[in-house]
Length: 204
Image 1 (cartoon, rainbow, N blue to C red):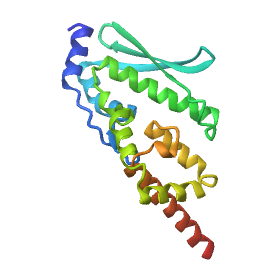
Image 2: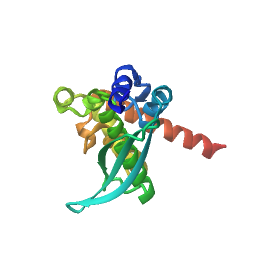
Image 3: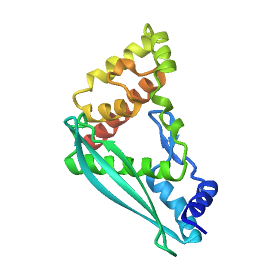
């Protein structure tokens, strides 16, 4: 059996459910770790193995982590190689360099796995599509409850800037006002919970 036949077998049999949940974004997704966990039995069955190698490259003053995924036939040494890259996010100033690079490496590896094993992850980015979310924001622009929630969030923005920035990043938004009603509600409630926990600790 050729390496391409083995790869085809894995592509047809591999199933990786989206068991991870982004509560703020409101969507399910699969991680690189999920794919690798589901993949290992198939690798053993087909007598193949995979390994990654990462490199950091610069394009247009931006830093990318490029990963090379090697798919190797243990029986005859045949190899298929594919590459994928992910950009380090310069906006995540609260993260140190190793965290940024590690996160980019994980994304790049996921993209490489998706490409080689024909895993469709298009729906993972549905939440970043602007159509429906922008309409929702427009409809709720004059919503008193929403205005009050935004005011509450901004009152505590300095204290919880890192968390708010993380939520905006997950939603693919730049400002609090761009979030839809459900996201605003989620963010406001979580900040309230954080405040409540902190106050209880202070009393104790």
